[in-house]
Length: 395
Image 1: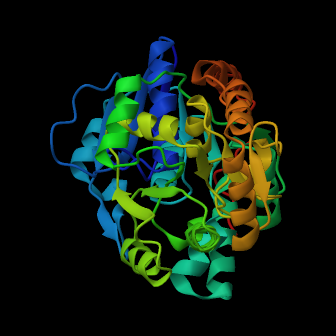
Image 2: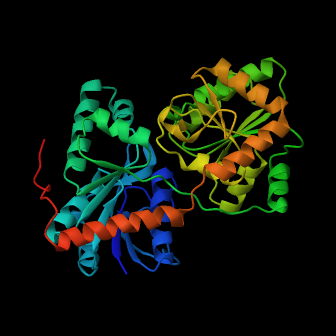
Image 3: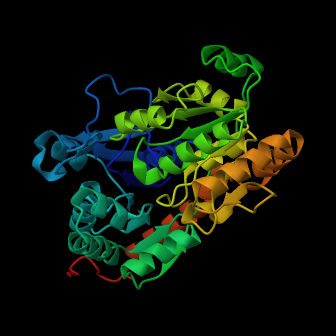
């Protein structure tokens, strides 16, 4: 039995992509007989029972402009320090280079434990949006690279994602460890509830799930849908999620005069309802240029729903046009064209969705079998004193 620490800056009840990956890692490792401790900022002071893993939280503060996220210095939280001292670990796995990553690095250094870190996101884009300064964003990226340089092994969620980290300046070895998916089914009754709740009738449904943040290229989806309405194409668009740009997105829906076709439905916490939305959708529109290996595309594929994504984007690495998904240019008119043509051939679109179901989702159990092998290798190297001392590296 391995004793693994999973360190993350986002976790339940926040269910962004990274938080969901950590949840899946932790639950699957526990099913495999391992002991998992999740370390994260405190998001909810309510009852935290019911997990198969141990959750150790530290006091966090909201990020300005992004109230759904928390940051904090774990080492300053006396209660956290007391709890973490009592927990034995064989290896630490960091899913963020920021405050949780800093604590993972500190703990790995103090206890002389192997440290694995996964690169999930295009952090330069986040820095640039937050600061509106290219020079500050570049400094931020240097700090990110410095973090990964100090880890014993670095993973990326896809080949294209690994390429991004190399573009940032990281020169070490990178292991590609793709995200998995939970294979499941949905009941016809739940799908019918989606029809009734949002009065969909027989209209084709285009679905978006993710942060309500312009960085997700949501404007392209809205403008494409406006083009489709002008052309007389029948459809409904539902956007599920929350985020800093919710109000602006709502205003843009009105400005484009598609309020009779498009609706923001907020953050969906009910997993069965979300599955039913995926299953009811004819198309999953996700033209994000920001995302690396989006969980939502895999979840849509589990339900047999094909995604339409931007050609050559990092997120579209798993899509083969016309086979298991659809690709478009990063242009609203081209997205409108691709979606309109797809909706005209529902039988063909259904076959593409079936191929997506067969080729895109990889069970988490299979992903974690490989992860455990790498964990065990690093633990063995650490015990033999064969890991290089990377902890003292600086910029």
